[in-house]
Image (cartoon, rainbow, N blue to C red; front, top):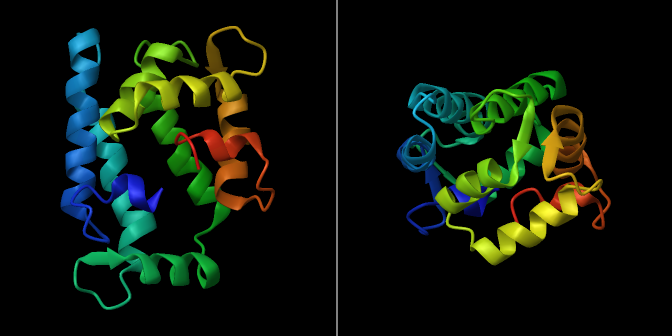
Length: 165
């Protein structure tokens, strides 16, 4: 996830990187859905900085280096309940039509904004959509994100959430 949020590709994640991510997703979402408001996505990325990255900024320079990120996550991982709540906010922000499912189109918009190639996104979605119905339900999503963030199994399906790994 760190590398997906490092927009400048300088080995650092800053609040500005996350603002750019949020703005990209919001702009792409608005192209396909007038009902969506960019505030949901921008709010998610602000929460992501406040809960996930800022505490990892061990030298308080406003930027998180990979070493800081890994150190923080190895020793001071945030409360899992709070982390899952944060990931629930992401689900709500990706789910454009509010039907409680993430469609291929909604998922593709999110990954496109993170500069993940469409063929990789398609492959990842096919891994995540176990029943082949073209949707990722909230419960499936929660399971996959839990695997991604807290699991130790390198073969876990959740590792595909942000594309190839």
